[in-house]
Length: 232
Ligand code: ADE
Image 1: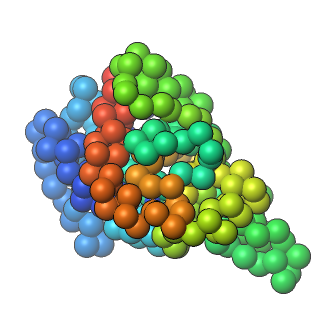
Image 2 (image 1 turned 60 degrees about the vertical axis):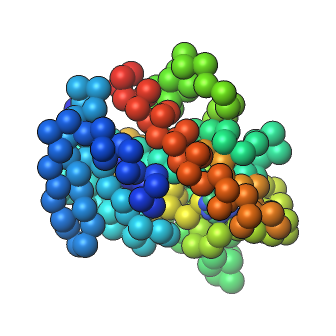
């Protein structure tokens, strides 16, 4: 993997990575600023894609088609679904699903995109291992789990939705971009992984804890990405 694209939805998720780039150059495409440079001797393109699935999908396609990245890493924050997860813990994606796709009146289960071979997009095992090894060796203060990232165009902040995403989709964490990034990466045969730090528990307290923890969680996610770049 020679050239790696790193996508975050929000400024706080990418600004530190951007500032770490050696020999940084910026190019604007479709209103997005793509920053190219080197981290840990690797060619990296860092970009803030904006929030939700369409922004994330468009950005991923540009990274692949125009910047010719060999792999895509999505870094950022997420709401916890898996019971053991605490604020600041990390989820490394095993796969990703767009849970808000709903053609159930036509007979497809929720989360299934009609006429596609799969709607569960599997993350790259090498990238998953690199992320998990990075976590283990750095002896960070939080825990890391491998599990499914579930994605939809909504901020989840109630128990009913949270419980449904856990039980119906086996989601470990919920967010608003990873599934779209995974979908586009799959269509382009490009390896990907999603690394998300927990900023809230996707329940009635989510709005409050999100505001409090988003910055530190974004930093945790960024640290994982930097540490894993050494390993790929
Ligand atoms: N990103 C961080 N927390 C989230 C939540 N609860 N729902 C959706 N996206 C999130």
